[in-house]
Length: 440
Ligand code: GLU
Image 1 (cartoon, protein in one colour):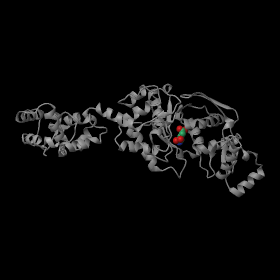
Image 2 (cartoon, rainbow, N blue to C red):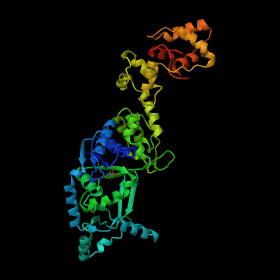
Image 3 (cartoon, rainbow, N blue to C red):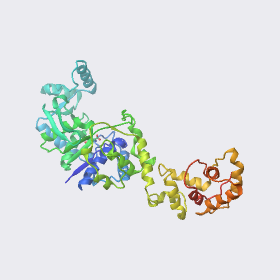
Image 4 (cartoon, protein in one colour):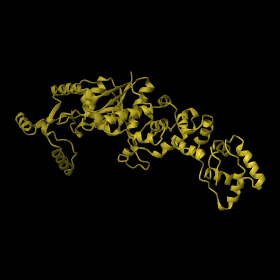
């Protein structure tokens, strides 16, 4: 059975970058008829916040990325302690006492000497007496996993065959000095115990994967299949990391981005397939395949989400927006006409309100000086509402007869006077929706 998971740390809001990870894992499980786990990597008690965990769940629910179960690492600390003991027994876990400043200094020295900034394992060379002295002076140390210095190899689901020299990687810290277990270890335990078969995550995790494969091997666990998707950049290929904060899912939602527009876009960018607007996550899952993705950074332009949202709404029946339309106070018998008129002229459903205001309150007329008398004369020929399907024709026929104007010279000034716009919906539809007689 295919089991995937999305494992955010609830230390912030989800953004478009995280969404790709969530979505890929969700789609793989969905396509295979497997299970999708939401795992909150909340072993950092200071930075993890319940409001972030709640918002993560709300975001995923909004998008329809439902999970089969939710797990919290903070509830599984005993499992990680057992794994840490096992690593100690196997001689693969060692305590070290360097402070962040000391480590930084070491790294700088190595770089100055043209060496890679890999931890020098000084703590491994401490005698028992020296360790006791360290403990007396500095208290608990942090714990590092002792990598075997050999090549770590796997076939990545996106990047293909990978081989990483363990000697080029620092022994990873798995338990911090304050006792906090880091997800590098927690994840290994969870992925194994939860039967996770596929892990897709960002390519910033490639080195973690190498070390996790060794940790798993040392604990006698079989690794899942790993795949690393490329990271997002801005439209010009510029780094997006600093802007991701402004691309939070909850903000996109507030701004009116439609879930299926967002998902359809995020499931395809960075792949060789064109973006196809899907109506359901199942349709998306059916066409999803990691084979179509490559290692090149993926360009992301937030404007595309709005273009796709507009396209999505354009294709929707009234039922998709009936609640929004009713909430605006549009009478039921006008809802269908209102939607027909509005859907070609909106970017998000928030724009519906502006259109209804125009029909309900009337627009600020746009009248050229030379058309003033003509428009005044035309308005005098327009009866009071309610208007119907023939109002526009009847009215313009009457105006034509009274003024002798025809064609563009007749219709354009009336359109601008009624809607305040140079272009827009069919005037026959507009007239039916008007709740007040337009005036100058
Ligand atoms: N909590 C980790 C992160 O958000 C999980 C990484 C993983 O998928 O294993 O970076």
